[in-house]
Length: 71
Image (tube, rainbow, N blue to C red):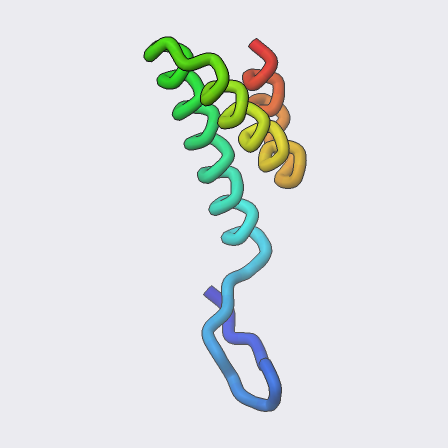
């Protein structure tokens, strides 16, 4: 955690690595939810979750999980 100046005040902020890790976690969770949706017999919901996971993986450079969305 880093301390960043915002408007003359010091507030606790997050570093870019922490933000990136949180986005990766969210993208990976979306892919997993897509897997479970597909197993539950809902391909429409699975496709929506895979699309979200794909966008988040591209934003964070999470290449392995990005390609896993295509499987």
